[in-house]
Length: 209
Image 1 (spheres, helix red, strand yellow):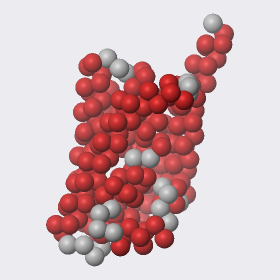
Image 2 (cartoon, rainbow, N blue to C red; image 1 turned 90 degrees about the vertical axis):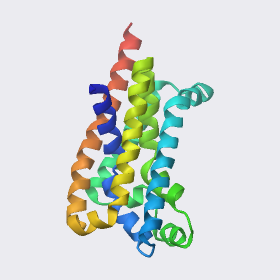
Image 3 (cartoon, one colour; image 1 turned 135 degrees about the horizontal axis):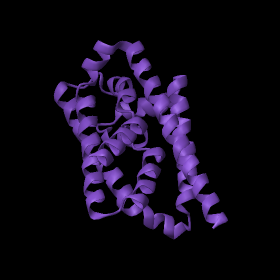
Image 4 (cartoon, rainbow, N blue to C red; image 1 turned 45 degrees about the horizontal axis):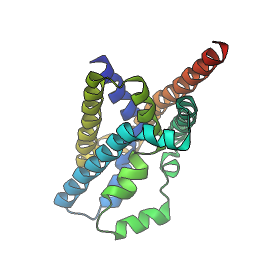
C-alpha cells in the first residue's frame, strides 16, 4: 500500500492534472458536454498507455542508447525540478510546450485528447523518466502489479478531474487553481531534488567501492 501511495502521489505531483484544468476549459469551451466527456476519457486512456509503455519498455531504451539509470535520475530530476519552478512561478503552460499558436491549432482540430492534452501537457519527460527509474528499483511481480494499479488510478483521477474541469474552474476560480498548482509545485521540486541526490549518492558509493 505504501508503494501504491508513493507512486500515485509522485505521478499526481509531476502530471499535475489540476494545473491542466484551465487549459482544458479553454480548449473545450465551445464543445458540448458529451464531447468534453469523450475528450476527458480518451485523454486519460492515452496518458495510461504512455505511462505504461514508459514503465515497461523505458529500460530497454536506456540500454539501447547506453544511458545509465543514475544519469536518467539526474536528467529526470532536473526536468521535474524545472516543472516545479514553473508551477511556482505561474509559467506552467509554457513549460508544458503549449503556446498560443498551438492552442489555436488544437481548438481547430476535432480531437485534442492525444496532443496537446495527453502529451506533452500531462505525460511529459518528467513522468516518463520517473517511471523508468522507478521500474529499476521496483521490478518484482508484486511491485509491478501495484505500480500498474497506481498508474491506472492516476489515469482514472485524470478522467474525473478533466470531466469536472468546467465545474472546478467555477468553484476554485483562477486564484484557487494557481494556489493549488504552487503547492503541488513545491512537492514536485522536492521529488526532483530527491532523485538528483539519490543518483549522486549512488554514483559516489559505486566509485568508492
